[in-house]
Image 1 (tube, rainbow, N blue to C red):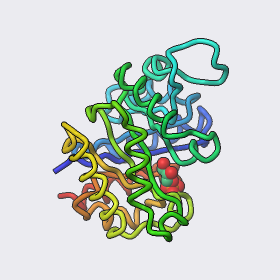
Image 2 (image 1 turned 120 degrees about the horizontal axis):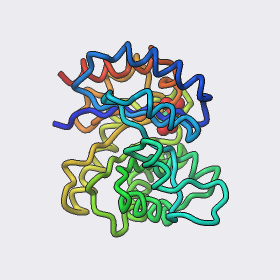
Image 3 (image 1 turned 45 degrees about the vertical axis):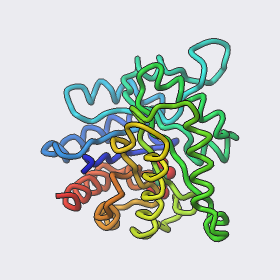
Image 4 (image 1 turned 90 degrees about the vertical axis):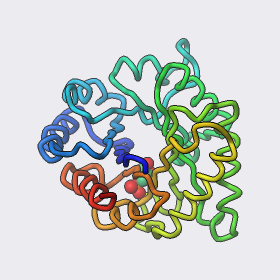
Length: 250
Ligand code: 13P
């Protein structure tokens, strides 16, 4: 049984002040939680203040992206050591919004994962199919292609996979627990076939997760946690998701 991981992806939301307000309220709401791993991925500008406020708590921080070089003339990019120095233990790589708006390919994702792992950052790799791909029955092909390209020459240690069907992101249209479980089971088997350490990899579901649907998702055997966008922006809603995950897994 995997210890659940509930992660917040704030995307391009929250100023520094809004981050401070969130963390003050949120910490009071989750002070008794010791059976779920909690991670927040704020925008880069909020990392430092979030890191100070989260000191001496179990809440960890993630970057939402990283560049695949150590340093240099790459205007606007962020390196692994910058994320580490800002207090991150993790980084999200390959989110569908990065693939869609910033033309990230599996090859780029692969380079990012390698440099992140080399620097000791844990990686949350996002994969998932579009609506058209699902309707054409290509879901498993897409997952396999993304896993093969993204994980080329990458050991599984320090890795989490987030299954995020694109059609469920920000749409209010959640995958059914059965659909999520089926995709996760496929990913789990792919990882087993791929190599050592596959059982330690947690597979998160992402896409319109809410306090209302978290329990039924987490009740599925292959769902080890969630990557939450919109519903992680309010402390109360994110705390309710964490509590729902706890209740579903006791
Ligand atoms: P929503 O929860 O807003 O659908 O976003 C999911 C997501 O993309 C998390 O990375």
